[in-house]
Image (tube, rainbow, N blue to C red; front, side, top):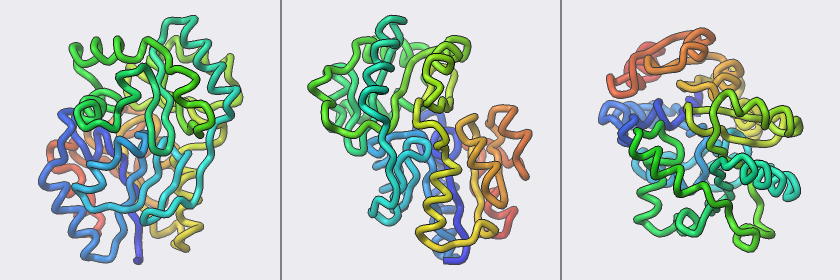
Amino acid sequence: MTKIVFLDIDGTLVTKYNNIPQSTKRAIQKLKENNVMPVISTGRAPLLIEEVRRELGIDSYIAMNGQLVVHEGEVVYHNPIEQETVDQLIDRAVDKNDGIILCGAKDIFSNSIVSLAKRSSVLTLLKGLVKLVPGSIQLSFFSRLIKKPPKPEDYEGKPIYQVIIETSQEEEEQYREAFGMLNFARSNHYTVDVISKGISKATGIEHYLNHVGVDLKDTYAIGDSPNDLEMLGYVETSIAMGNSWDNVKEIADYVTDDVDKDGIEKALKHFGLI
């Protein structure tokens, strides 16, 4: 392994229609043939990474914005949020009538429907709703699903690594003021990911590189959303998708095409990785 490319999922590997372009599949396969390791770096919980990982044949990932780091199936770093803090977040969300989801290493907890996410039909639903920019109909259904908070007996004693809150960017500030011990990372206009203070995709990458022994100068990252900013600022070479938020494009070394216009393949060819 000579180089590593860290790849966001939504808006980067996966389109808004929740599919992976054929050009992206070709590019990832060629990366591996060229002895360059692709590593997923996402805000998604592990449960919602599985199909993407299988389809692309990627065994290493940074999940939940750096809270969980896995190399070839082995957990090399994990950082759950304190139980008391999780309870306080739930209380605040209930008071504000905001939807809330708890993400564990193997489970997702919200109301009774979402907590059955391991069942394939609900998992299919969640893939399209939880971490993608939803359409108006999807958003309406999603909101109804997560308005009721999870039952304490469902997640008691289980590590929670990330909390997803359905709230606007303006109202997010109220959470930031009340929970200064936490970090807030946004990948869409409808929900915000809540993780431990000081944690980001960048810290996840740092833990990963320390484990595999690859130098920072041999790293690339591709993303599109605000929760990718730390990652793009940390690696040696940063790439923004053509469909990226403006503030992501501003800090990137290179801006490629949109996810559904062969953006991944074009970027990797540009840097001679494939």
